[in-house]
Length: 392
Ligand code: NZQ
Ligand code: ZN
Image 1 (tube, helix red, strand yellow):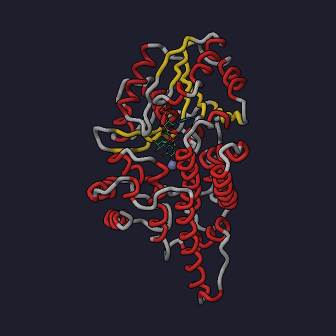
Image 2 (cartoon, rainbow, N blue to C red; image 1 turned 90 degrees about the vertical axis):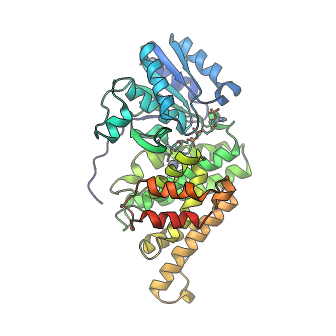
Image 3 (cartoon, protein in one colour; image 1 turned 135 degrees about the horizontal axis):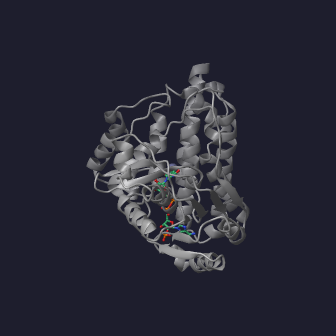
């Protein structure tokens, strides 16, 4: 194991039906002025907005409403939230939603405490915020694990960039599977695939030899695959829903990353495509993963072969030839299994299935995405473009 230093600040309230008691318990520790932040309309449609607002009022809070946070939250929305938080002297931000609401709040919390533009601060002066408005997250769409970390992915429309910014940790996360019951199955699936992607990107990071984090990771990947299949078969399967919620949290709470340098090349490419197309995150990842991994054969072959065996249940086949040929064949069969799983759960494997047919978008994404070097192969921009084009 490589050296690490692990401290984890997010309290977890997990369990079906835990939301009311968890929120009320947490509200006893916060100031009076609470910003209730949420997305584009589902919260009101499902009735959850009224319930949460009444819990906050029962706790004696002055509630400021901040709705309309869109999927793939924009930098302009961050600025709107920060202005409102300053104006209302917000003591605490309660983010209720999926990754988009939760991420947007992380940066509102930081931007409200500094005058300077937080994007320029981080990307031009390489300084990071140290003061934040305290926050908590109530998860209504699981998968990103955004409630577990202090990174946020924000779309800067002016700059045509969708990139990470450093924000605050939420002091608590409410993981009540009842709150995700209204999520359309399409979003459940893309969220769960996002979790699987986080696991794979972590697993394929350095070091390539398997450590304890990787072995835990294999169990999380198997769990996500099994429970997603169960939930698609029976959307009332609360056990599967809860398992997926916790798997999503585990994939992003740092545990699987201990002793590893993670590689998130697939994510970096997807975010760049997202900056140009506003596409669904999990769907974009589904298109990129198989083709990206086919280009890792010959570089991270042994790790891919191990993933094939431990996650997809593929065994070595002596008819494939020498030991080296057998390992390469296993790696390839594992990627085939991943691709058939993507098709089985109804996610896309080509850009055209997502309505992305303009090659220039893929060129722009390849030209602007972050290039990572922490897996087993560093790609050039041209290689990434060719890869993306091959799955038009
Ligand atoms: O906006 P509303 O009307 O609320 O509808 C949302 C949205 O349209 C809907 N929804 C959420 N909960 C619901 C519900 N509909 C019915 N019932 C409910 N209970 O779901 C739609 C998608 O929501 P969104 O938050 O955008 O989805 P997701 O959780 O997948 O988040 C995606 C964002 O997270 C970023 C992505 O890049 C993307 O911007 N990520 C953040 C990460 C992080 N901070 O660690 C890691 C990820 O890799 C990811 O990049
Ligand atoms: Zn993701």
